[in-house]
Amino acid sequence: LQGKAPDVKQERWRTCVSSVGSDLEWIMSRFFVERAFSKEAKDLGDQIILDIKDEFTIKLNESEWMTESVRQLAIEKVHLIRQKIGYPTQSPDITNAGELQQYYSNISISATTYFANKLSVVRHDVREGWSQVGKPVDKDEWGMSAQTVNAYYNPPGNEIVFPAGIMQAPVFYDPSIPRYLSYGAFGAVAGHELSHAFDSSGRNYDQNGNYTDWWDKPTIEAFKTKTDCFVEQYHNYTIPTKNGRLPINGKLTLGENVADAGGLTAAYQSWKRRDDEKADLMLPGLDHFTKEQIFFLAYGQTWCGKMREEQIVQRIYTDPHSPDMFRIKGTTANSREFREAFNCPVKAPTCELW
View 1: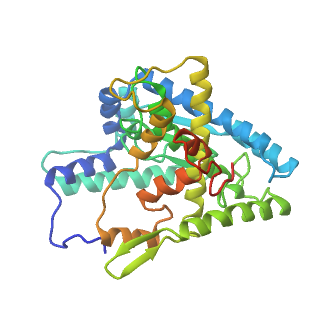
View 2: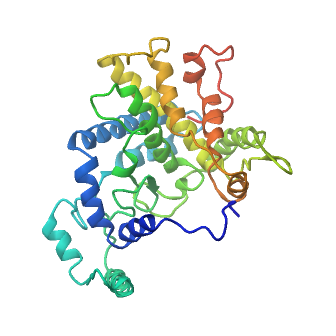
View 3: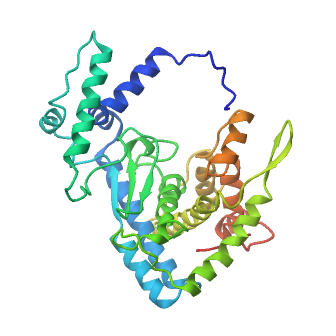
């Protein structure tokens, strides 16, 4: 379905890395963090996310489509969002070798018995799962290993999680690098995940992660009116295929498209506040761009990629994310700040929620 030849086998080393990464994820996480993620990087990541939470509080206070009661609950929800940056320090603490050894103490690993190793890991995972039955949810647990290149918002936990794997260039840069690069790339990702707290799915969970509809009817109707614009906008984007042009499913991708737009504008405003306090320097060789333009170039670079036509078609039918090219084109079309930075003739965004 993705255009891959069925008889092509993955390189052996990739299979080995994948196996270790899934079966002994916290051990691999420890080694990855030691090599590729500094305390300074973690501190900057924390700062960026705190800045974006502050920006969302401002946006919520200014929003006119929410009623006052819903707005106050939304602000409380932002304040209570837990942020997990880089790697877990509990359940287990990957920086503590003794705790890791204890965590995996009932697993037997041999250099000669791959199948037996797998069985031992499965037994461990099953025991871990059953041991949690009837106990309170462990809010310190992570759903991704530190080396995972991804991020997520967890509605029941009201938490945003950013493993060290995604906090690498070209998404996240060393703190010594001008901040418009990290805010433009990682900041937009962070804002995207935080936006999910207030999309069509996240709104069904309150500030404590309880499943409940805390929006009133006027807010729901105003949200639908605002987001119908996004549905139509993305439906008008099409992908060329050998069978003709295929439109993006604006309804399927609505939540992610709204999050992209909200995340980018929150990241930009957060960076501008920091830049007003202490101005970033320009990078050598990029004098023909403004800092504002480089911010958006950093955002666009995170979505540079190439896919087989078959995979793009499959994703259009099944993936709630728009194809990468429209995560650039659609999101910047919805950014007033982008239009101003590049002096576009029309400054008003195509669609806007935040």
